[in-house]
Image 1 (cartoon, rainbow, N blue to C red):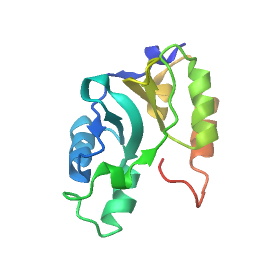
Image 2 (cartoon, one colour):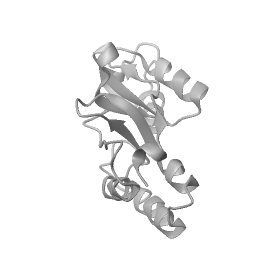
Image 3 (cartoon, rainbow, N blue to C red):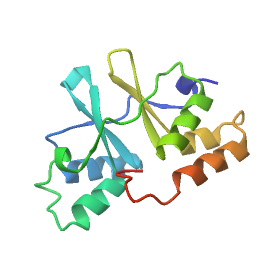
Length: 149
């Protein structure tokens, strides 16, 4: 099975100049925990990702104003990404290795075309449930240097 078979296609994205509240509203509306951060408008080149955890820790717990804090200030840069044609096993391995729950899907020009989450993997019948549990266990390991989940 390939990433294209399980990913959410054409996810809503934000730019680095958008504020934290904008990203939070997208997450609430779309019921997602992460939003890719792009440059180039229609080109949608991936440069970062902001998660609900980033917003909670960097903005809310840090006492910052969500309306004046830009995503440039709270996003994770150089996110792990994958391609539509990658095997879901490859994505599962990337999630474990980098301890992330969501991975943006990009094309050959780094344009965001989708996003895949652990929940997407867990819903698929072909995915070994033991493997999904192992992915979640690896991701959930406590690290002091992790920026986002």
